[in-house]
Length: 311
Image (tube, rainbow, N blue to C red; front, side, top):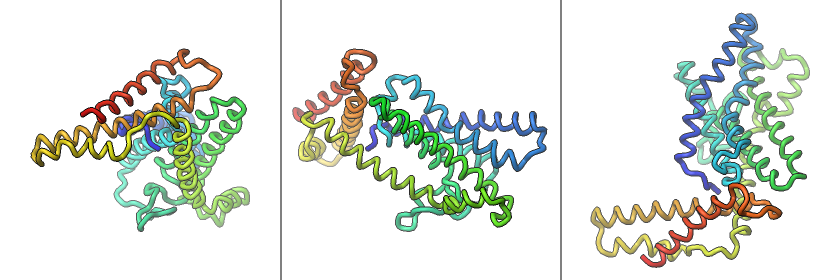
């Protein structure tokens, strides 16, 4: 149930590219300055997963903590997951360019019609985009739990568990490149076997995505129950009216503009639902940022509904 704009996801992608250089700089200071290049395997297995998995989602974490422009209360878990995926993919692009990677390893995990759902996963690691999406999805659960204090601790544990899981997968995947798992000491082999050599995490993430999309669809239907909404017939009639006069450029352009307004209406409608879902019932909506955001998106939704019915 997406309510975040594609432009926002693209901005997170660019932000991920910028933070990639900060992460690489941090790794350089630790491995080359402090360690003087003496522990390459430790840098690959410990420092790289630690700095990259934390650094990729750090911008999103800052935005959520400081609730920049009401970001934390305006989106659902799936929206945060997409923002996290944008951050991870931005980092992955910079890393691949830095490595001058020309050939791509065989992907693994779930696929649809022969196309891998997580195409940047390889060697037992989900990939930078999917791992950041996994952690960001858990941050979305934590944002929901903020409304009910008793769920904050379990949600925080889920975030830390996902972060630790991705770091372990990342580190063991890097370790497997330089050595055979058969020669690892027992605890590492047990962890790698427990995770099915890294092949378990893609299916867990896919199940979480499907479950979250379903749960948020039910949540929005309950929160927005009784709220006026446009019927599919009204939307289709709104798009069809300009085309009754012909199929020239002005009519097609008008239909396209109307389609854009309907898509924005859909995102605003969902965002209004998430605002109401995040609003704690014991706090007046005129306190904090809720009042302005609810008024803004209620106005957007009502205006589009009026235009569709009257034009």
